[in-house]
Length: 441
Image (cartoon, rainbow, N blue to C red; front, side):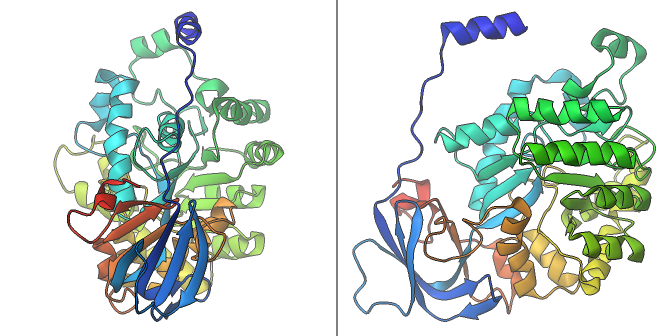
């Protein structure tokens, strides 16, 4: 296989592809503007965009609009949203487990193209993809203008232990396991400190942007435990220290308490899901500055599907029913305790494009709408470690979305995104027939 790929690479050298064309200059006339730094909703504002960046932001709307103005006076403009936990190469269905044996990677890649566009049109101009070999390639295709989608920060293959949540051979029979051989650090499966270092270096070689570990069992993996710790503290620390050498941040999937404690003490950037988070874990997270990405949507989705005969394998079904139902309550406690929270859905578990429903669930659990919106804008940028997005300010990326009405008064309007701009390109606009709605410059 390697020889074949090398031959193809020599026969067909890579060709540079231009990124999407960007309008030289545009003006957005916003009826209201969400200030992500303060969490306040401001009155009418004009946002000037040039060459993919925000050139200026000023109060008021000119009486005589410029010829390049976009009329959003009936809408609230917000920074483009970021979903910190997605899986762009897949989407849950009763066939998900068998498809891994029947479909080729190219099949999942083609599916991801549609998922990416749905995500962007739902208002999410950036995502952090936490596990999937398709994501780095999809990221590059979007950056080159071949595919419409959000900016992707890709983990590539998640790092697991043998039999752990991201062991790709879980559920395989003896014959298949013998044919494939035992997966190792190259495949993201580790069993020692040295393996952990090698796995991170392999992700660097593969072009990942972030490192993902599965610190405990998981809900949807073909294994009994959904919460047992699966790394030693030393193994997690080896991942974190090696990741730091390469400028990476580390996200830790974790449902069980002990696995969370080990991950936090070892220095991970974020805990994902956090289902059985205790007061002790919350204190540790606050002490270490660890972020929490709750993924309420995924919890509710799997708990609902667990009621349907045949949707999940029987080994998965009790985990989905027990663990999924807890996440929203855990989120409510963590928010009240003052744990830092970033927005994430685990989309790919649920249907792509429905990401904004997480806002509704967050508010339902007691978080103010302003804080929920901040979690997907300025706070998400902090989790990613970037300073050029998440706010509508001069010099930042021109990532802007707009919704009708007032999202602080009615968070439900986030489900009706009318306008999407990413890097100065308009992909969706409220006026039917507008050329910009198709992403044309």
